[in-house]
Image (cartoon, rainbow, N blue to C red; front, side, top):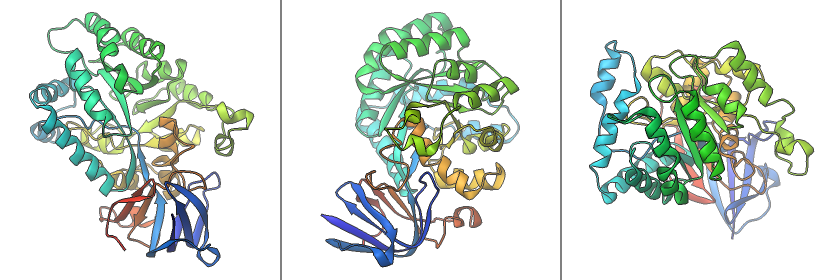
Amino acid sequence: MSLLITNIAELRTIDSEDTVIRDAALVVEGERIAWVGAAADAPAADDIVDAGGRTVLPGWVDSHSHMVFAGDRSAEFEARMAGEKYAAGGIRGTTEATRAVGDYDLTRLLLGRCAEAAAGGTTTLETKTGYGLTVDEEARHARLASTIADTVTYLGAHVVPAGWDADEYTRLVTGPMLDAVRPYVEWIDVFCETGAFNREQSLAVLEAGKAAGLGLRVHGNQLGEGPGVRLAVELGAASVDHVNHLSAHDFAALADSWSGYSVSDASNPTSPAASVRGTVATVLPACDLSTREPLAPARELLDAGVVVAIASNCNPGTSFTSSVNYCVTTAVLQMRLTVAEALRAATHSGAIALGVERETGSIEVGKFADLHVLNAPSAVHLAYRPGMPLTYQTWKRGQMVHGPRA
């Protein structure tokens, strides 16, 4: 069954050339894109959808979120807006609230948040554990998340629970807890930060995850300069996220990790450079605004040759939004990215951070038909009309998951 989507005012492919096609069309066969080009040249198809002169982008790839939680931290947010500084301790309050909720209600909450993300154009979603912090709870959260999210990250090393010695808890994270979550997760993460886990503890967590066959991710350099970025690069982590406070050595380490990389080679599995992958610097602008930390230096990272992704960091304490539209708008208006750079960061670069760039993150023949239709004649409107509800439809693997039907 083939489907022609036509009358597209602007099609942003986010391919290696950042191709923009005006008066465009595309053909979907099953789950995948079968043809892309000018509407006037479109082949026949079994069915037709008229895009009504709207813009079509790849669906957002949200490579960093914390969706498995219960409870509310609005009082903490209000206090922070009144001048209190963010500290990682608020995570413990969410942990208590989440432990008190049964599987049914926790699944319902997660489904609702994922539906909100889809309504905002997100088609690929990573989410983490990290609000359980016991063997049974981390395993429960991982199990529930694995039935809903596209990929799940184990974040038992989110914060040290009250009453625990940090080294003793690290041994739990790298031993029985890791064994319990392993069937449900693809990644391991650690909050390498003052007030959470130091370099040695973070190294132990990441090495245990690697030995268990998991990909590596790091929360790093959010609250100040620290070892997170360089540890991530040393171990070949797929991404290091937050990156608000970077030294010259951190910039150099990230840039060096991408030496020899090119977007065109990455899309060609036969290229000798196709296996070259550095550590993606994932910026979380909604979190930066909520915590009143300095905005991550996305502009400088891009200029240094680092692959930069944008993600929502949806969580109850520091970024209670799954709107990648909002994050992209912020990146353009306040982080000095161009529209094209912000779009790539929230799609193709996010896919690189999750290791799925050959399947999604751009509109190219053979990739999944993961599409975001904007109720606007150009993607520029995301920044030009900040805060407006521009998502019209969301398509995931060739099926509309949000928006009006033709």
